[in-house]
Length: 431
Image 1 (cartoon, rainbow, N blue to C red):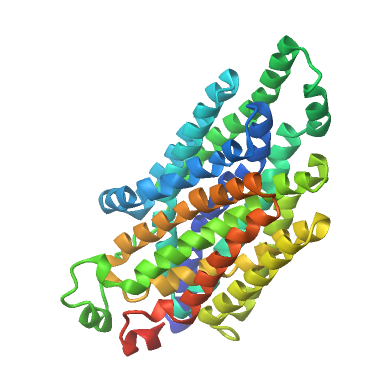
Image 2 (cartoon, rainbow, N blue to C red):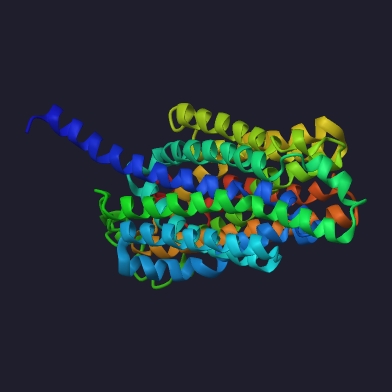
């Protein structure tokens, strides 16, 4: 085989897995960002308070904390490829529960379905994020994850438009009529509203099961994360526990805060817009705006990392911009405040791609368990938005966004020095 042929063959061997993992990231985005519509939709259909409505994010994201470590155990048995298929099947089970939930209009069933969907995503993310990180040079890992992010956020931008067009159709007029309806008419109307999710989720179940079969029989290669190069093996000699990697543990906490602010930016903006006097018919597009700004940021990452911008610098800029935009959102009202929340998509875009290679650097045989701990950090999406909901209800919706500032400050700390904590000088140079 000639050198040119070998290069082409290697590129194909890398591009095929990237395309398959890209499909999975599309699924992550579509399922995850449906929550932005489900919050105002279920608040209306199940007659919920603001705090109760934000249990949507709690039920969905707390599953990452519960299932992250078991996901690592499952992957040790199944490997990456079969584990991804299992994850897709689990998400389908969770989506299926939405059908009896809609028929009974019982909020607890919706929350159970969301928890199971999050559990399947925990398994998928535990497999796919380290997979794409390892599938190529470490210095360009953020670029590969940015490419995955584009697939993820395109799906995320489409999801609220598609589901919102079905579930929130004529929602503003419905809210006005609801207050004057007789009790029996009100129940019938709410039951009809709840039933709107049945057909979309039947379609979601079918698509997920088809993808599970496709992944199972795909040519996706296995990657052995237990093998270590000579330098990594020397650095990790004598280490017996993941707790001996403080840069990873700080990375988990950073991811916790990051997912919290990302979920707040995407999932609260529709409801927040309605509190600013903006009709739901208009506000339902705001999550898409947030995700479009994230796409812009991912494009910057692909073009600039690592040639013009290191992963660390990208993260510093992102955190700084997040602090500024949070302050604008708190101190202003109306469309300006809403626009600041939407622009957080730009601030958030390069944080996730940077955290993974920085936190997994030098883990070697501890990569699977390290990835599981990072996935546990996604539980920030369960806690931080709930804190926002409590503050928004107790104070006002704008002041609720004050929870963003300490989160971005911690992200800034990790970008400056936290990712170096506990590493040798050789390991720091390698990243």
